[in-house]
Image 1 (tube, helix red, strand yellow):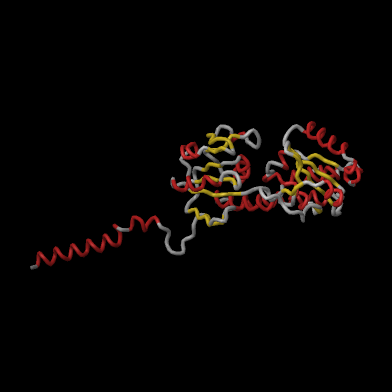
Image 2: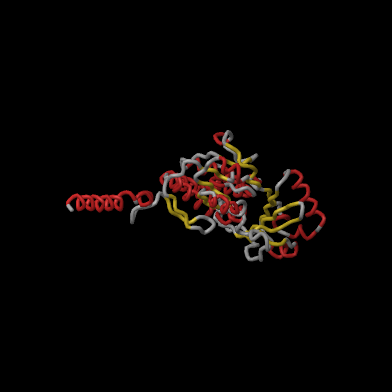
Length: 319
């Protein structure tokens, strides 16, 4: 019986060892109770995101993410095609298609461990990428608050919180410097967006609307009902604009500035009602550059604030 007893003891001991170590393959990978993740945050799609480790292979689907990511110590293995906002360091990175036509196969071919998607543009790719085992984060960067949140999240992704804090402090300082250089008066402004389809009025949620708010100005269209498919715009009505009678009128549009101005001049000349508006009557009609007011200025929001303020107050141009 002794040999049998010894054998049984060895079997029991081996079983205990397997229980303690052999089955620990999955347990070793799982974080211990109370162990902090590398990063944990809520993205712009309202999803709870946890990163167990720092991503090493990042793909972005908007060129606007490149500069802020780089400022907080990040790099990419893939990026979209873009004629604007493409920093030199990213030009040789792998293309994953145009911003509005991101190719999921090209993204996956980059073998990413994280893909950063642009809200309202290509977050629908999240499901496909997640099904292929790729983590995704959705970010928005339209308003200044969006950009600040984006910087905070990107700094978490790179593990460079101090760089993120320094970047945010620099932006705040630059915007405050502009505010201090101009008179502290609440200008009543209106923002018109001109397209081939006609005119719309920009609300506070638009980039130009947000910029005016940072300057403490009043957007006379703030209370208008937005368009169903564009919450940042309201229907244009000359009658309403005349009634609101803004002191300053800003124009935004994609396209050639000379053609835009010629078109708006014609519209204003053809209807005498335009000449009753203070902004038009006093020559306070200004055209805003599309790279800062239709494309997100991102971490260059201070430049957007400076540009808008300097239309009325030239002293705001100083840096």
